[in-house]
Image (cartoon, rainbow, N blue to C red; front, side):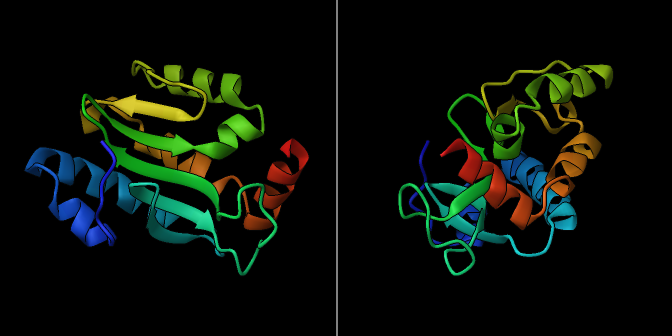
Length: 144
């Protein structure tokens, strides 16, 4: 469900109370863990945490590099962790996730969840903290 909201607050206000509450909690975890240099914006119809073009203007599509994102989809909510996919740490992330005792529903970089209790917020925060802007730019340049 792509949103036409132009601000994060507008996006969150458009959600049902249960989804808003869950995404606000995940958002708090992301913001508390986000390394300096990333920016929170609405992009691609979701809350995006990205490298501003002023920092890295040379991207493959002319858009800011998306480090992470948060969205409410039709049948689930999702947190997108680009660094897990770009740095080929998916197996490590999956093992850490499963060690929490929670069921993992993951695509390449998309961790889907139906309830906040399905998501290990400590692990999400650890992953968000794991990659500086300069390291992420290097990862994305390597994959280009």
